[in-house]
Image (tube, rainbow, N blue to C red; front, top):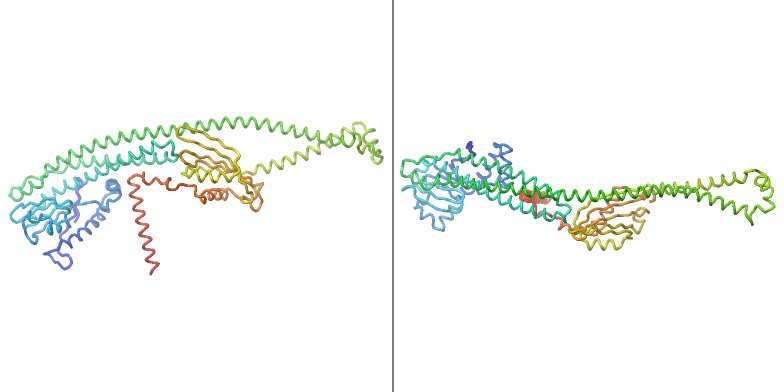
Length: 523
């Protein structure tokens, strides 16, 4: 059966009556070792169905997502062991000791607690054999309570070191945040996960201290064999050691919390720096837009006035060619019209001049509106990249483009290059050449932003690209040329320990699924 105590101790008990062809007596240690492996797995499945989701989450935290395979303590009680030898003879560093290692791990010590009873300690269990061994079961169970807490504390210590390593890695990520545009999101994620782990570890530590206070030390048995076993188990000394170690863990947790506060403050500084840089860029862009707006407004007004004036000048010049010297006005066939409608008609020529002006102005404005309409069919695509690249390959690509603008901004940590180019072959883009603005960090080798301007009204109606097709074509060109440094983008080496464990499990599951599919295909 299964027994769960309030302090957290969990016992799985079973009486082995037969294993394969060995019934009741002379059960082989080889068979028993295989049986214990199954018991280890089945007991975890049973307890997982009993405890709450919160308790399962705490277990997964301590054992790094592998709580189902957590180490347990085997207590084997046997009425007899064959051959029956003294404790020293079992520790022969040979055949007997190797057999015992299958069920209790590396043997540590062996004692004769009475003339017929023997106690053997192992790395993950103990063996008590003899006719009186069942009488010592309460004392052995009390020992198990403390030894399981001891094993849990060891795993707790290991998890603390993993947590410290994760915080050190987070500190390194913060240090390179100025040169890595993707670091801020990873820093925030890591700090949130670390804070959650520290809170839960602190809660677990409270439960450990409470369990050590609740567990009672059994009194020393009156009989000689019981006193000898009580002395060998050293239960009272183990409790005091666990209390001291748990107190040390409390100090470690407090130190981790303070270190996390420092990391959080540094992350806040990084975030403020990013925000300050963004505000500077917005302020600079706003000034540029204001200046451009005023210039554009003045230019538009001036252009409109010039267009009307140019239409008038052109119309008057055209009329002057007709009515001036060596014009058709001096010809005989136009003399009647000139005399009757121009010379003899008051304001006739003025009215004709105005009409011609209106006609020329209408033609010019119509042409202007057509050109203006075509210029307004622009599709703009802005893509935030923040991807690691090979700068040399990007330079090779840019050499083939018609570059029209280049701006460089040098900083303490970054060299930002903004470059504008236009595609040379309009046939690849539906007879409309797009203008592309690319921004990258030359020193740290990061592609930051891409902006594409494409005039769909200039392109052929049947060949014009839409926004989705433009984005796929542009990014596909970069992907085909291999400018992305995918190995440099891989941050799995700096991932949290929990995330690394999860990635390993996913890879194992994927390999198992592929193997099953191959087997089904072979059948």
